[in-house]
Image 1 (cartoon, one colour):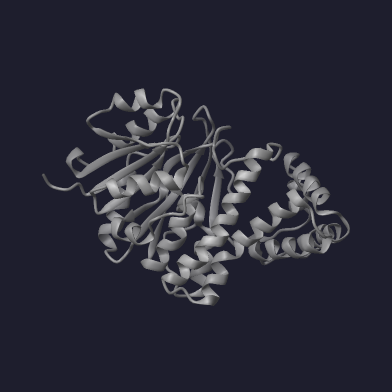
Image 2 (cartoon, helix red, strand yellow):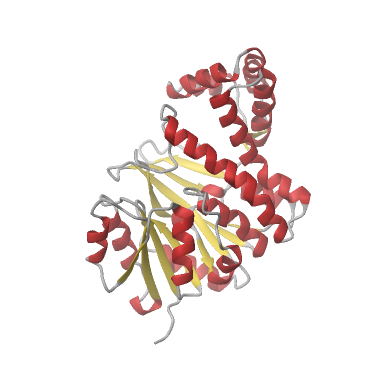
Length: 358
């Protein structure tokens, strides 16, 4: 029996509401059934996920394991794949019908490329459209230049699980993924992948990213359990990624650029949860601003100076509490009215209801 061209690995945990749509979106792809195999790795679901998946046997291989998180699911499932290309899908998302065809074309046209990502549609828990999120153009990137490394660090949203497809040889070199990454194991893989071979990011939305209350990495800031889980995962990435990048020969100056965004996120979480000194808040917020924007207008600079001034005289927990209050009430429009700043990230977000781009 010939090997499939592509293996699709669906990781799932208690996705009884969504898993059928995820599987159907794979089986309806524009390639012939013999060219692909579909594996569902069930990370110990306690709902009816297993019964729903079994309806699709034998088109789908069902692999069940004890609950251990996303990294353990990848470490369990990837060695079971047979295709030379492996595409990933979270059990609560679903693909556009032309996803696999376009991604496989990208691999065929770029034989030296090790991974492909792309844009996406954001939808709510009822599958209603919210935004289209895409890069401003197609990209081919690696870690050989600082500018490219900076772009990759800004475009991780186009390389997460449901939009990440990689050659199996690249994945073999990355495994095992550290198993304390119970979520965000995809970030470990897509951060290391460009150190092995170039990546291509397509400016097309090719899957639907569902936002819902049970998203394991989407958190409610008032939920201390989920907040602590996210912090531990980000700290694990901060601890493990540099060693992996060094192993693949990434030089220190490139490594520093790759890790900047993650370091800012971890410092913010520590200050908001544990507190600290106001000057620490000032430093991390100044660093975050420098990473986020270019071509900053005078009014915007003035506004940010006021914010940084507030950070210098406010205890960190109180500062981040105010920041949360500000964001929840949509007061960023006040900032936009004062002045403009160009985002450093080449991400185009279009509201699917209003048609407005950001």
